[in-house]
Length: 190
Image (cartoon, rainbow, N blue to C red):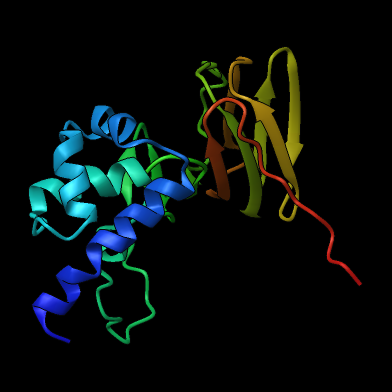
């Protein structure tokens, strides 16, 4: 497939994404900083997209840049994760799209001698599943111990703290979403 063929398909994909989100050209212009006229010309194929135009569009639509240009698959199914270390935690992002519910693997270091649990609050909703180890979970004035295979979900506006409950690291699979977005698990249909 030539570059011209790849770029020719961008316009219809942009229009489909915008319409699926029920967003107007004016609304998308406000989100991206591009003019409605530029967006219209991109969608109609009258303007070749540039990287400076595609990046804010990918962010606004919550899709990887590869989806906008229909990049051919590389044949490599591996996900290349880049861990981030913050406040003693190792956080591995598992989702690549912007916005909406995000998935992370979080590794909490072994419990130390300090027994303080500085609670935090922020907008959002969180669900976590204990993959390995034991977790001490403080929510409001309640405290819970969770073992491998157990899960919890909570409104992050309630003061909370999560950490390893013993001298081993604790590994969690975490889903975090903006306020109002919760993890919805349905039993398998038989």
